[in-house]
Length: 299
Image 1: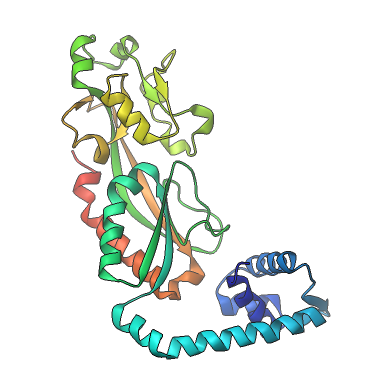
Image 2: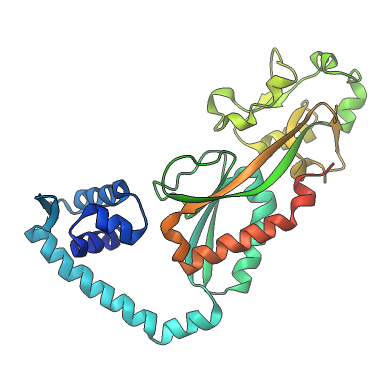
């Protein structure tokens, strides 16, 4: 069971209206409705009856309210007891799930989030570094860093950073292949790329603006796999500078023409801004990534 659903249940029981509960929780009324439906499905019982625009507890709802109130009292006791004093003295506590694109998550965020957990011993972080979109609405993560700015839902969004990508090749590969002096010369080369029908965002459809290969030496959903294939001499690929620039085996190709800038956006549910562990992680990530800017956008 998602215990957070009980918070929505308790607020709707107290307010008696979907709009009132939504205002108190700082979310859309559709979010409250979805949470209540999910809870009813989990319990296999109808918790509310709608009468004259008001939401009244059913018998099952009244029984659940007793249980949830008891649980809330226990939580309040913990919040004001000895464990709470330890948590306050040592900083935020609990689990935070951070979703990010694979390359950025593994190469840039993992070490920074490790430092965060050293700073706050009671804080735990799940880093979901995946080659796909993660959704706040389905509670896949508490904080999501994406290449597309969220346009729907009650979320807080901030521009985290720009980053650059270039076309790269292995130095030995480039030495034995025809010189690339202009985009027309790319027809003599092999390429490494994403699997088109599994590409999770149009923001990474970059190669088409330079050259459309007739075939690819290797394709992968993983940017790390693409990077390793280029290192092995399989062909050319568009890679993030923060991943490829530090590798002496690789060299930029057509750096003036094959240069792309994309943006990382960071978002979280509006209701999470008051949760200490999430707010602390949000602020830390914003400051840490700001310090990374020279690595993310090298000239």
